[in-house]
Length: 229
Image (cartoon, rainbow, N blue to C red; front, top):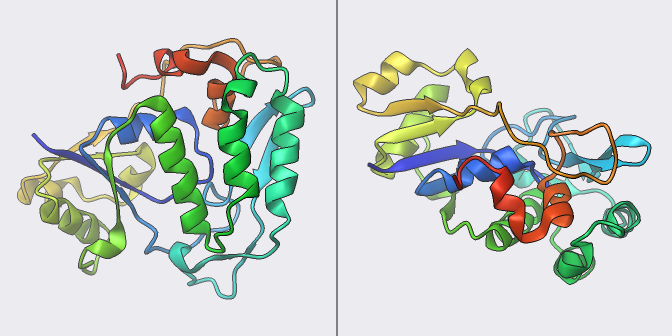
């Protein structure tokens, strides 16, 4: 039984995003859709001494209909700023030194100008650290048809998928009856019940970038994720 997930690329996503990748046979980065402001595409959270802090990549949005895949960076200085903040925040984390060189390379020695490509590089690097071997593809590899549900089911059929795993947010628009007619089973991702781990600062916060988990627990990161059990 083949499982796939289809999701927009996010910047240094949280652990639930990588659980979804690890639960499927193919993961489709769906960046052929409208870029949305104040969303996870270009920002994520870290846990600091002063509380939760956003790290945001500055991007150019020329029009509301602009697609994620066409979204470019506005100010290249974000790389140094983000890396400096991460260093200051996590330098005392138990495993920061172990992963420092990997992420320093990504931040300071990369020159992608498109948001999608930046997100992709972080995602595949983190998958490698976690030991996730799921095949990752782009939505532009498929012939996308009209209709929100139809488009997703079209990708499912092109992938010969039996099961489509989705986040709960899609329940507002996804047509489960149509999926059933097309022979695709829908499974909704459950993000509840994650165990806590030792963070540098209190109170504990689940909804931060997975970098927090990696820097704090190292190779034990997968023990605090659902898909590895």
